[in-house]
Every structure is written in C-alpha cells, then in structure tokens.
Length: 120
Image (cartoon, rainbow, N blue to C red):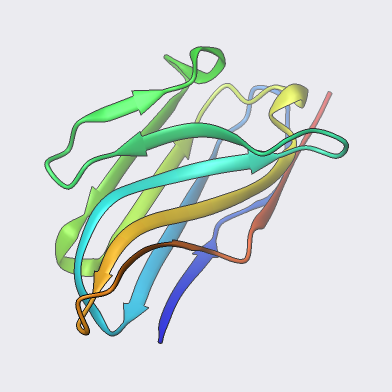
C-alpha cells in the first residue's frame, strides 16, 4: 500500500502565503516525478508545478514567480510554497507521485486533496 498525505491548506487573504506538504509512505522503492495539481469548481484538474527526482522544476505560467515547488527525497515529501496568492488560486490542491513500489510496479498515485481558499 502507498499513501500520499497532504497538509497545509486553508483560508488566506489575497496577497497572503500558504505552504502545502505531501508525504508519501508505504511500500515505496523509488519516486520519479512529483507534482501538485489543482481543481476549481466546474473546471478540469490542471498541473500547477512538478519536480523531477533530480530537482528540475516546471510551473504553469499563471503561478511562475509566486509558487515554488521543492522536495526532500529522504522524506519522500514534496512541498509547494505559495506566495502572493490570488482569488483565482482557490481550488482543491492534489499531490501526485510517479513512483515504483517495492514489488516493481510503477504507477501514478494521488493524495486526497487539500482545500485552498483565497479571499479578496
């Protein structure tokens, strides 16, 4: 079994900051890419940021310069530091990990989601 547990969401005023964390646990052999996605009501889930095992990062244009993704490979944890938050950042944020289990099986895994609400 593999679990991805997110934390750090909440309610914040526009211009504020939040830091999301996602810890992967269970029968994990290795983790490749990790990422954060978000889904607002009535919209499709979209990639916010991703990071490779080597630390290369990728961001959607609307969050560049405001969000920073990082990871601690020793802790199987990925973070998303969100600064200068805007009301349009309001969504449920999901953690994703492309990982290999100790059985050798490789698959994408998702966290349960954490709500981020930015008030204007």
